[in-house]
Amino acid sequence: MKVLIAGGGVGGLTLAQALTQAGMDVTVHENDPTPTTRNQGFRIHIDANGDNALRTCLPPPVFELVRRTSGTNDNVLGAYTHRLEEVLVQHFPGLTDDVITNVDRNTFRRALLTNMKVHFGQTAVGYEVLPDRVRLHFADGTADEGDLLVGADGIGSVIRKQLVPHATVRDLGLRCLYGRTPITDTIPEVLRHGFNWISDNNGLGAGFAPVRFRSGETPNYLMVTLLAPKEHLDHTHGSARAHHQPITDPSHDPRTTSPNLTANLELLTEEWHPALRRVFADVDEFFPITLHAGQRVDAWKPGPVTLLGDAIHAMPPAGGVGANTALQDAATLAGELLSGKSITDAVTAYEKTMLPRGFTTIDSSLQLLNQMLPKQPATGAVR
Image (cartoon, rainbow, N blue to C red):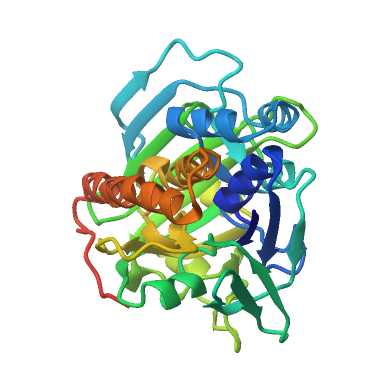
């Protein structure tokens, strides 16, 4: 069996590792021109489901590489007001050193690329189902053929738009800034451990989570995120440099720009604790994103094309469940394909599990988001 995977993100590469380990012919086609082109997101939370999926899918040497280059475990979850007044602090004991709880996105991706056949700089534009094959077409006029095509090409999935054109993605009306800064003595002590959420009474929230690498080969950092209603942040989405430099959007051409991000951020947080404002000011680079959620869709007729991760059930970052759900998708699909079933039967069984699980997780993430930002209900336009 030859499997084509459109998209070399977390879910697509984890699936590729599982199938390659089992002896299948797997080719990943990735839009990014190089493995290091994308620099966004920074820290990824790995929960028990994600950890189990990685153990199931990855060859032992690759899993150990992921574990060794992951962040150290920290069992603190805290909530504070924008004045750094404690609301809630919880400790979750019992984490063993072999459990993976957080990774750096780029470091994680490099580990997942180990021994993988990945073609970078190939933008998928569509596919056609042949009598006994699937042909994937690219923007440069080339194509590749396989027995199964897996669309793991993210929220703007070309594969989804052709396979399930009625599946829609909702703009939640929220924007999130991702950034990072070195862990220094100027950072409040409570922010240097676990994950801490801070919110005010104006629908603004911020999350802080350190990444301390086990291996010591990469500098540690504090991930900084800020969520706000879209009208408060003057940008579309893409990458943004702080200190009054403009936002640029690398995913569109022509690029959209806005010189007002830093001024908006300073104004939004003017009543926040000075130590928090200093952390924001110390972030060298922000990457704003638009928060989306996939709309629930009924099962479609299964065949030699299927979807994985954000390509079908895009979800907001609340709860850190997006990557973990994609990892579960990879483990489930790999298990079905390796069970001896026909491709159609394997895809049918996979989608029967994946669809309800993914959309139930979206519902839970939206509920949590509304609790985190009670002034800003998660509603928005469909696109």
